[in-house]
Length: 111
Image 1 (cartoon, rainbow, N blue to C red):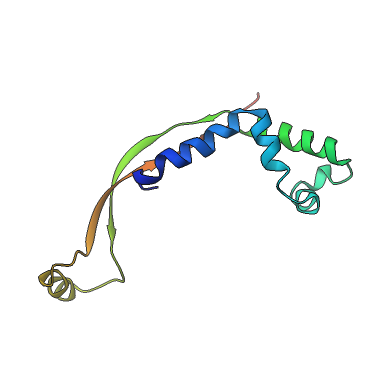
Image 2 (cartoon, rainbow, N blue to C red):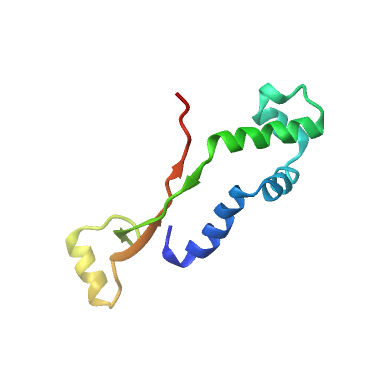
């Protein structure tokens, strides 16, 4: 993810640490969709369904890390070196360097 979006993503991911924020987010999903995604909870009443989905999220998310990597990306379709030379002679860039933030999730493993 480009660093320009890091603050917004961090705010979104931080919401995964708070029960009330998760429940509010879960309640924005239609019950029928939740029951499709969480088939083992499909028989539950709404409030029990929300709590079970919350428990599932709690069991699968312990945190996240952030690290930055330097990357190089092409700005369009693949080109030959001759095409790129012409491209660059017009002042356009073919290869773009960008620092990117990576966010691996920490999932608890129970033994």
